[in-house]
Image 1 (cartoon, helix red, strand yellow):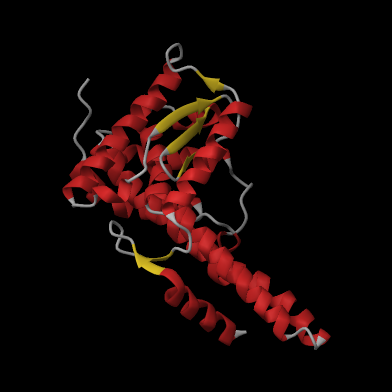
Image 2 (tube, helix red, strand yellow):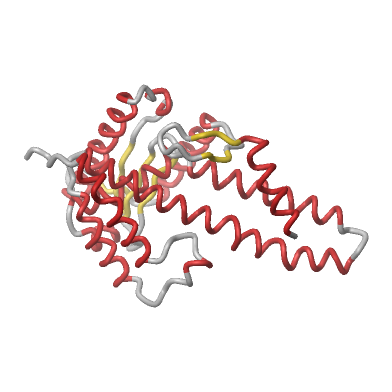
Length: 268
């Protein structure tokens, strides 16, 4: 089993390992960004057609979502341009929509398609906290986390197929392989990588919110409210795609000095 995970790591780097030009971290990317953006647009339009989108021209919360999103998108564009990386945002046509749902959630698809659920606003409670969340979700997209997750799953599935073929003539070893490989791959590889992406989104999302003129310090009370709202509902961190609330808050406090160096309040 150890050899399989060594093979997993080697294949990941040999097949399609790239260095993210903003975060500086090596990533597995098996899928083309243009293809992902096209798929995301189709899924986004389908989602909007099946859910209640709140009109920003007649609703202050929907207008706030668009305002925050546009400010963060502009801050990201400026940041990438200053670093000579404007091409990294090719194909991005930003959209920001508020959807009527009790779910406490928000997300951003490749290409800049963003949705915030009304249920989240009960926890954010102010514009700066909303900016922290939207900065986090937008970072997932611009940092190509979706591509990375899909690629890791694809490699893991490929190895699982190879393992099943290799042990097909030995039922005992085939059963052992299937009982061990999938859960071990999940706990030892996929979940830790997902948590690392969360920390990365926290880090750069905090910076982007600050660049857009929002106080990044609002991240701490926001995540404390999130922790209180979901108390007792989360699995142990090692079984989760997300960090524990305590670890996330500790990391955010560590990121805060850098974020504050970018912070200039929004002019009213």
